[in-house]
Amino acid sequence: MNTETELITQLQAKGNKDAAFRELVTQYKERLYWHIRGIVKSHDDADDVLQNTFIKVYRSIDGFKGESKLYSWLYRIATNESITLINKNAKRLQVTNEEVQDLALNNMESDVYFEGDAIQLKLQKAIATLPKKQQLVFNMKYFQDIKYKDMAEILDTSEGALKASYHIAVKKIEAYLTKD
Image (cartoon, rainbow, N blue to C red; front, side, top):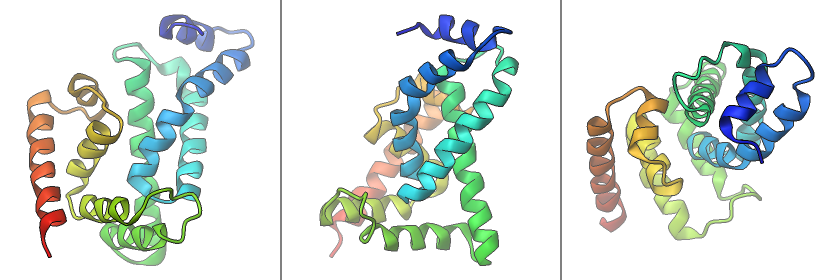
């Protein structure tokens, strides 16, 4: 397994970068898939966004300046691609982004790739009630255990703001899960 620096060097080399790109995909596809899935909810949409993310990475790797970690750069692209898909779906269906999320949540129970139970589904519904930024922060911290420092690079926000967003999100989710 290559270090991040070696991988970037190989990807930006003028020769055959296909082997390095396969290595990149192998190293990051699962983590990126679950990050994307947390945003778009649907397995099929997550697969599409993951593919679009790697296409964008392949085409623009030469422009990667190393000002952030490769990992952070990939997550930022995946996050933006996820939001783009939600926006496109909302426009296509002529509904709000929130309604697209509601549709995805309602379809989650019948999704053969959803491995959760009733409690997991209720948690997903609670997360869906949060503003988009709090959803992103909660998913990245709770499900993927991404450090605030890395999140700050990915979302271009201060660590303090992210900690506050996560704290507020947790309180809102707790309130949602304990009502009834």
